[in-house]
Image (cartoon, rainbow, N blue to C red):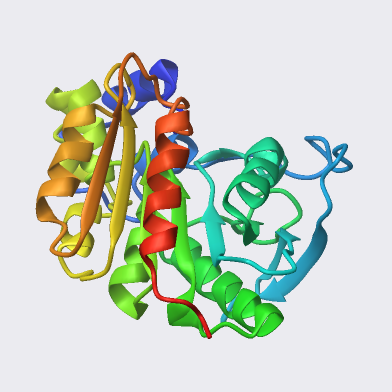
Length: 277
């Protein structure tokens, strides 16, 4: 996630006297601009070197066109759906998708939410969860693996998306990298005087959702993350009711969660899961 101080100050200026965020409030578009920072096609490298992928094209339940990159594997030890952060698009995760396929021997789909990359529409909390559900459905059909047997993985905002999907529909395992307990909790860490729990429309309450997901969970977070504190990762770890691991990256910042320690822990998680067939 990326939080702009200028936008936060603009929000502060519009919240004077506002007790509750309304859909038509002047605060609403400022919040959306802060939470969702998409980069649309053609921004990014859409022909990356040494990335053998298939274009995935599918539609959400409301008809929104969605796009992603699918990296197949001839004998995957797991099938993974990856939900990225609040900025950029799928092209910014090309190296990670490649590394994960090679190191962990997985088939993986990275997709763009509505309004990101080549996907149509405009982002919203309900829309992003709908997009993830459609992406998992496509991945299940492409691989022949049942939807609930797919591993869900999310980075930052994508962790909120993946957690909601796991809580609502189940998952074989859940992997969270540099994610939060809720969006208002992130806002409170930066500008508590705005009372974000009262005014924010976008919630992504991962703490509550994770408490309803009984499956295996891996959480990775840097202890020097200035955007989302490591205490939020620890709070998520505490509420997870099933088998769980917490990887704390010494000196790790917000985008430093994909470390060697993370890959070792992920391999341990994946090898502990029952086979697909």
